[in-house]
Length: 298
Image (cartoon, rainbow, N blue to C red; front, side):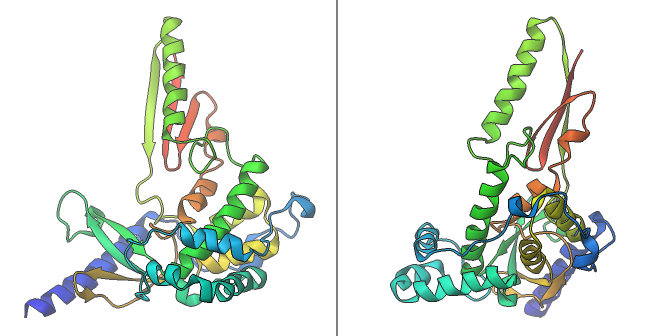
């Protein structure tokens, strides 16, 4: 009887998590990639982002840096197995990832997440009081890390990210964001002025991302159609199941958001809010991913 009760609670928790993030998102889940993007891009084709094929050395470096003590994904294949057998399977893994990039297709089996709810404050049986951490297949993480490296290098080298964004930028961190704000406050004090600040934090930030809006922003920031199609494949037709101890819920589809615990998730959210600082007219913005500060001197 206790086991049946746990399974019922588990299924309800999975549904509640999806409903909670669904409540916070805009209504628009089914979209056509061609309709999402204009026929012509404002970015010249020669400067658009495109995936290039990766070498076995690049793949080996990513695999060697995988933490061996992390929990396995839904396929129950631990990173240790990949690392131990790398000398035999390296060429196969490299071919699979290059095939994904060249065909603009992210494999369906890599889109399945096993969610572990991490309780925060309050009643842990309520979805809003749990942080959903997605355990993803190791192969998904390897592919994501290589895609992240290429796209992040493009964004940084072309200066595509806002100067007020301190997340996912080389030589930037929470420390640089705090130093900038602190310095501005101290300068205001020297000039006998006060600083008024508003702190903004997005609720369910990663879960509430609208795919159509994100793809449109990826297009506008300078992405070739082939790369955009790969990101569309990465984002869509995902699914998740929730694990509590030994119990596992049924799998349910995800129509919005990016998985917490993914490699590309933080970078995708950074692009999603990249134009937010430019909307601040009469105040100064400073951001770190989903945490933003708006302040003005008086």
